[in-house]
Length: 508
Image 1 (cartoon, one colour):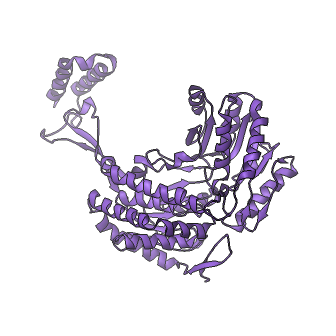
Image 2 (tube, one colour):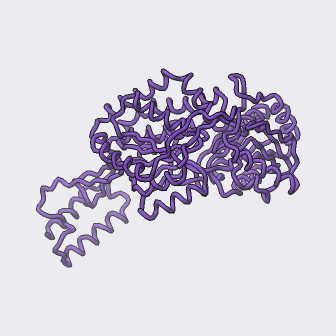
Image 3 (cartoon, one colour):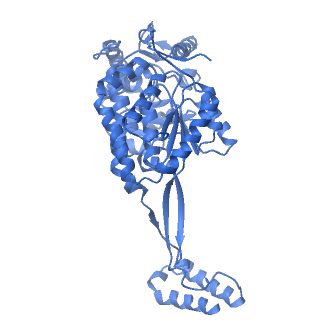
């Protein structure tokens, strides 16, 4: 079997070569992970946090080096490697360092009146081995955040990075070794679909996947054969709805960044831009002007870098060509130089076109207009996806009202993309955009075994609901049910409850 090649999208040069993991190696990695889990789960939260701090320090000590590695492997500009891959990773580590102990403490819950004298609570224990399959567009961030969350919750990890960015898999291995993590706690297996399939067949305790809808469906189908729980962070076709009262200059800048950051290769990129009719002409004019000012290249002053794969370039080109054939208008020319795909603005699009219904994952902004805010929301909801969205208006109350009408997992008002970097907010999609949430306390819980516990002090020899049954017990229970459900002031009448309780005990 051929080795994996890491190719620089900007120069086309082979950066490095990596050995593909064989199925038996993947199985062995999961077995080793289970063994390591037995010791890792016994560590205190403070001890686990010490390892997270060491990981964070290692990244901080190598900012320039790691940013350069990411840029060479993906083609993105250095600023985006630092801002969109490294910065969020560091933020999430700090967040879980600070909050893991608080989040994983047992949570007290109420105990029903019919079970007075006991207590109820929830505990959070690690699941075991987490299998993570991560993508190529933000290869460090979208691998490290689930890794960090799983480790914080007490799990061990086997990760398969994208075969398009194997250098980042090697980088993750290096970070874990240099941070001093015990052997087997985080293991990397390299390869394509066959390695991902082998990872599922090795039966980890959970699969966490970030990637395309089509691959997510295949992973879910395979995992279902073993009843392995899955969390799927899938694609988006995210709408940006701009109302006529919005700050147009800000909204133009937001569309520019939301649509073209990382060459549009972001699951929460703005992929559908809806403008209220009265501002559309002015907005498009300003947007076209700003697109011409963007710097395309690989320097520190460049705004947009190369696209990562030739397959993705071909996919974007096909969507544009098909849309134009169906009547869409190119407001900016299609210009491709090596792997640099210059930003494209399209008008005259409709929801009959693939470019408005299927994920593009490239630097393209298709634009439609609407008359009323309600129509804008209706257009935004007309999609099989539901990952992220944004609403732009100076009337915050109106925007917040419209948010409630959107069918999506995440929303921003007067901003784009930034919400995925908020460590305290759960993130995940609806419809074809995924299953489950991570980030925030929900992220830790998604990697935890949530166990509800009820404690009885056990002083009495038996409980009133135990055998034997009798007519007097039936009548007493009936009296209790009526008292609890018909008298709103029953809690203020402790004597009544005590009287009924005493009567029930006497039935024993």
